[in-house]
Length: 191
Image (tube, rainbow, N blue to C red):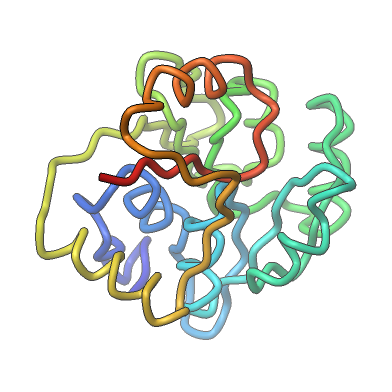
């Protein structure tokens, strides 16, 4: 697996999160991996492939994020300070950034010249600069790859935080809670 002269990562076309991880987990040379990813699946998949993962988390989530295999957990902060913190870990910038929070252009400062930046939403991806390749997530449904992700979750290889499990009849409530924000974890609807 790898990017640059080693070819593209092989996780394209999974779910948007896995596709993002595939873009995040590239390396420039054998045995040298330096990455920055956001999103728990992205971080776990990157770490499982041997990438050095730097993640951002609120103070209440630092222990959870560390347990995902992340080497460095940075506190949430305004983008300028976040870029400074990343540059203390990777003075030349990280190879790849996955912007799940849609911060956009201010985070480009964390990426090395010629690196890669993936926005969770293609429509809000910032304009490229300094030779950075900027792309947005767009995934195609792939039953085989989605089945693999489900298998990994069931086997405990990937973890996800569940905020609540609700019967399908409470779908409207689930949507209201999602729109209100502030959830720590996913809402699961059961049939």
